[in-house]
Length: 109
Picture 1: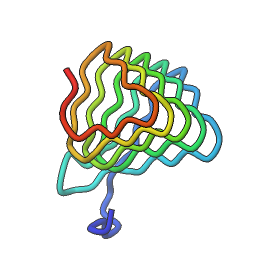
Picture 2: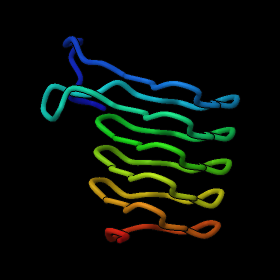
Picture 3: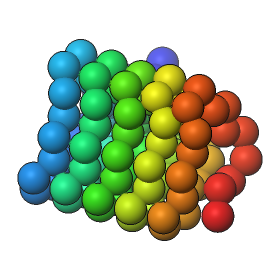
Picture 4: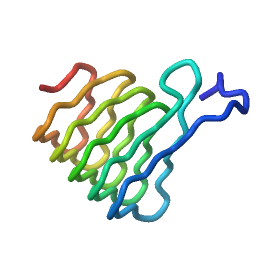
């Protein structure tokens, strides 16, 4: 995030997550909650990107190359297909399934 100036912010990763190779998970920014949070028991496959101030719930599957812009909120038990992009500030509800190469520009119930 370009506005990050070294302020104390955090990245919190829960228990029993599988985070595969070449994933990037960014810390939060003080202009929002100051924290990026990854819940428990998630499977985050290779090359995924979780940007600043995002929240990923529990028991989710992110296939290869899933990309979150900043401030994305994902509930529990969500599956997101490979190479999908989630725009900033989108919310994805519990048990949603998003297909391969999706472009998510609206909230998903």
